[in-house]
Length: 79
Image 1: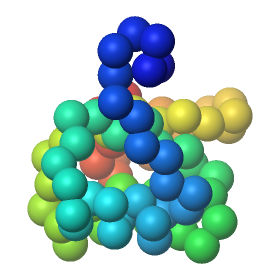
Image 2: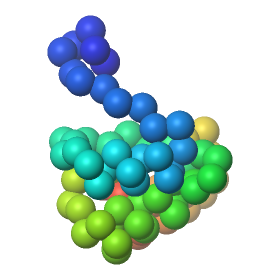
Image 3: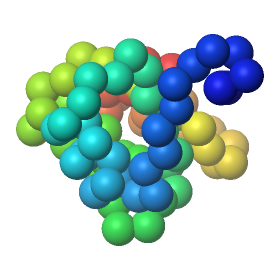
Image 4: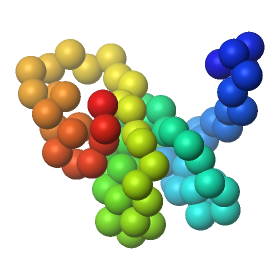
């Protein structure tokens, strides 16, 4: 992504991601659903309900279960 001119920050888990969001503004979040400490679902819930951020969030997952996309959209992800 940096080759295309984007600034990228990586959070090793949801808790670290939330701390980064408290300190800096981001234009987009690519959210892994399977993270240690706090998974993507819990992290998105905290971003939307506790931090009240409207930054676009796109789910990144190896899950291919029926209904997974709908679940992600329902909890506040954008795609």
